[in-house]
Image (cartoon, rainbow, N blue to C red; front, side, top):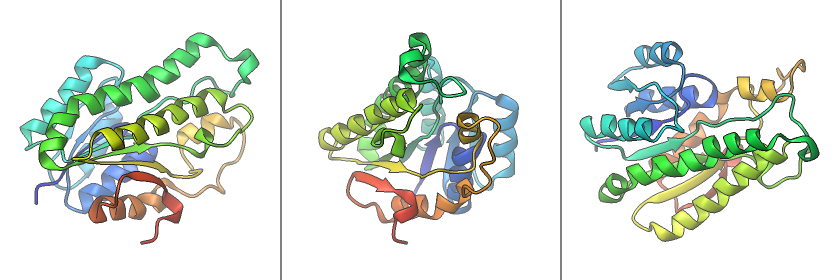
Amino acid sequence: MHQLAIVTGASRGLGRAIATGLAEAGWDLVLDARGATALTTVATALPGRVEAVPGDITDPDHRERLVAAADALGGATLVVNNAGALGPSPLPGLAEYPVDALREVFEANVVALLGLTQVALPGLRRRGGAVLNITSDAAVEPYEGWGGYGASKAAVELLSNVLSIEEPAIRVWWADPGDLRTQMHQEAFPGEDISDRPLPETVVPAVLHLVSTRPESGRFRLPEVAL
């Protein structure tokens, strides 16, 4: 069966780990990230058909190009909405949170995510595909300093939940990967040692389990997915 995934934010961290896991499992890929050099390096190292489409996910034309690239390879059966923005670092409290920065966080984490999903939906419906939205425990827990980012992820969770009802022809999963040793997480804790966090690769088996077993739409915490 043809399997092709669009993976956003694939040049580093969790996105790169998911892309690697899918490629090694035989998936074709269309990969997105803002940094062309880093994205190309990832893409050329992976097996199978992998196309790098560098650009900013908040750009509507870029989102169209991603889906067009997938269509040229047979069409996406999975969209992994992983790309996102943390916001200011160090993380400010809500009383001091720059409103312009909050708009940018929501544009990247919510608006762009829905925008790409909208473009991909017609093909996903035809192919019985799936959408995997990466969320966070900050969407549901009140962590000091995480109000801006957490609010954007809370929006992603509600959006995903409603989409799962409105689009019965596809699967919609929203997945919390837990705290991972990534550059974004380091930026949230500047100057701190985060080496105790697990590497992103540790949750890839859970992602592969979801896309292969295709459970009903819903929320998953990746470290707790029973393999």
